[in-house]
Image (tube, rainbow, N blue to C red; front, top):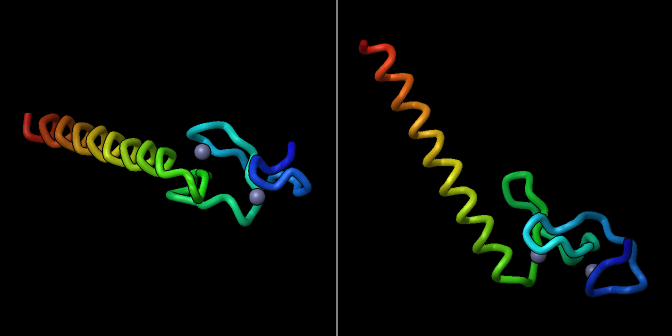
Length: 70
Ligand SMILES: [Zn+2]
Ligand SMILES: [Zn+2]
């Protein structure tokens, strides 16, 4: 697979949001997730995912605390 922006370069990773191949210059890593550096849409999705995982972590914590109290 070649980089979506540079057709002469091999892709180093694949964006988890849009599935495009990205070279080292075009990708960025956020919390272990590879995303397009220059695509704002991909960043927004990753932020949403972060909030979701944080909320599910809080929910899990609440359930644990309730179990301990009971
Ligand atoms: Zn590239
Ligand atoms: Zn992307």
